[in-house]
Length: 245
Ligand code: NAP
Image (cartoon, rainbow, N blue to C red; front, side):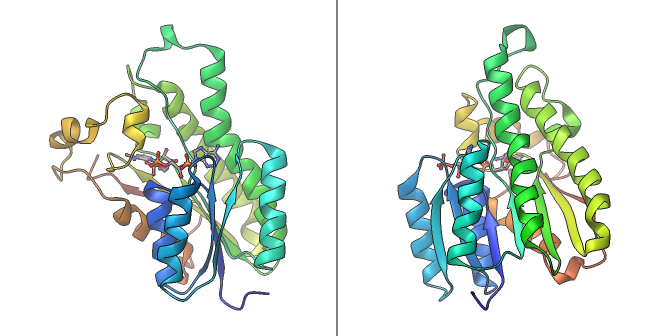
């Protein structure tokens, strides 16, 4: 069994997940990196993490697909032998459009990737957190704005994530497991290209009270805080990392 605490970060080959993986590694955590398609980026994150002298491995799994989730957690059992922190970070959006243009295939793809995944991974994590642990869900400021004319399906998936955080936090509080969430907004990552607007953060940043976009590292710091003992009396809570939005 790995002696150092172990964190699983879903979708940690790129963006906020990759920054979070590095952040935990710097604090001495062993890190299980998960990706869906981009193996070379996942390998690059692992190479950087090994420079901190901690254990890390990559595992390909679509976390919205139950058999992949089961395989991912069996891999953690075999390779790390424990799990202390789960970060439900994997999330996607699709091209900007109104509801009138959306079909069921798209809506279900967004919901299963962004919220079914968190249910499945949290269920498997809880089974392994017999001595307590911490789950941090990556939601979005979109849960509050609703993202009209861009992607209300994505925003609704994050609203569901917020309700999931509140419910699960209360459900497992007596077992010593804390469940919290960060709500980022306008962070410089590849995700905005998936929505068809690579420079979206720069277009909108002046509307934020802080007047700039955020970095993945700023989100990682908030995730780490919530997972750590610094937040030992905090559960069912939200930290907005969205420049004042
Ligand atoms: P990103 O740069 O596009 O990275 C997405 C990550 O998720 C990648 O590692 C990707 O893996 C992985 N992924 C996607 N679908 C997956 C699946 N089914 N199973 C496993 N992994 C999967 O996105 P990001 O901006 O860092 O977003 C991370 C989280 O922050 C998301 O939940 C997002 O909703 C949230 N967020 C982001 C912003 C923002 O402004 N960027 C704002 C609010 C909230 P591959 O590399 O293999 O594709």
